[in-house]
Length: 206
Length: 354
Image (cartoon, rainbow over all chains, first blue to last red; front, side):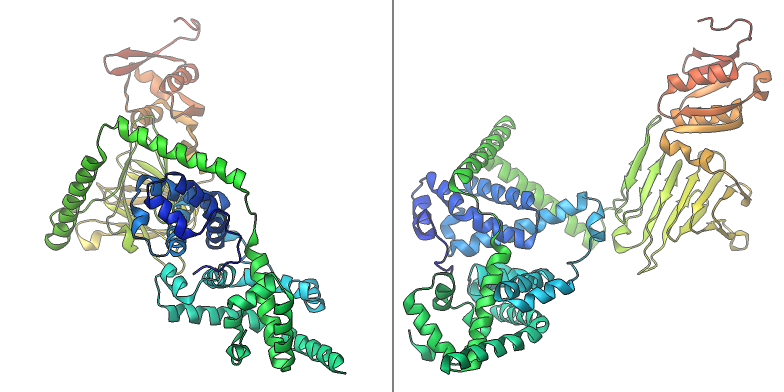
């Protein structure tokens, strides 16, 4: 289930589905407006090539328009569309890679952390967030993807499990493992943070 | 909000909690009061809140990216509709109803499936090797599934073994080809070129193979290859390892391998760049090349001509230009007679009589 944090402009998924089922072609347009940014964001968390993801989303809607009855049996629109994008992006990226020279093999996996950025990370909350973002960039792809679904989209473990076609226990474990990876690198910072907060509380109390 | 709900909550769950996230993104006074009180319960809880909050914000900022406005998206949606229209037109011009197309596809798929399963079980088909062929005057650069690159010269044929996918990198060659073989250091998987009577085993290298003459000529530019002859009697079989810059000629008739070191390999490999290099070449050698590159039969009218030699670079993809240069360099005249060309002498003192 999706959170209500995002400002959903054109009505809820349920009402969109109802309009489409009633044969309202404009429903697809609103569906596109409603989902494009979210699907784009998700697609890019799987494959950073924006053009490729854009193409996948467009083709998905072409396919939906051509196969009008597809959405009829859909139980959870969010999960359904995310699942489609995940699958199609993965296969499109595979195709793409087959055509490209293996240039990306020579790219460095994630950037080395510089001592400066570490220092900044220890300075302030905003810096700590920036530092966490850098850590996110270094996680294995699927761990980052799961964190996106869980903490950006705020999907439940069960929904993520459906998107990935695995059991929800596997998703749970992946989230914990990803968090462990983030923490392993932050443990030092964390202790400093706790210290800071304690000091702050002591001040308040005194 | 009931504070007990959060008594033993983990960072992972707190960061996904709707009420908590509401506070992080859109704090109100009620929120603030609740979460401040929660944090004051113990330093542990304060740290928990701090971590969950940083996580949520970091994830948000990391993935936020660019958000397109409704106007842009409306325009984009027109592209979707255009794609749908285009596809409908394509389908309409094909004049096959979708239903019929569906049945046709289904029938074809079923037939293929039956063939495939039948083949697996009964071995109906003999296997389906991949074949690359070039006609005369044509050259091709082929990238093999393992990322090795093969330049295939004119009038040649390269067949890939059918177990390629399983890692047996085997090819059969008739004609001439230049191989740039990708190394497989992890598996040390071999790459083998089979020609008439001779196998060339490779471990990551660049070399030229030419079977267009009566003998098979292998030129090694880089790396290491092993030659194995396939004579009928085991005791006659030979095996040798070539070193870079070496040229080996194998004659299937005698089973002999002649090898020598050469200074410049360019003359043997320049064909892949679209020209042939001649260095004191006789007209006979050039005619050999016309035959193998262009598939054109040539005869020489006067045996006196056979003694002349030339140097120069002649194109592999333009017979007229090639002949023109032969005429100029050898001081001869090429005349067409049926499907043959005949080379005539052209005395020096009567230049350019067309």
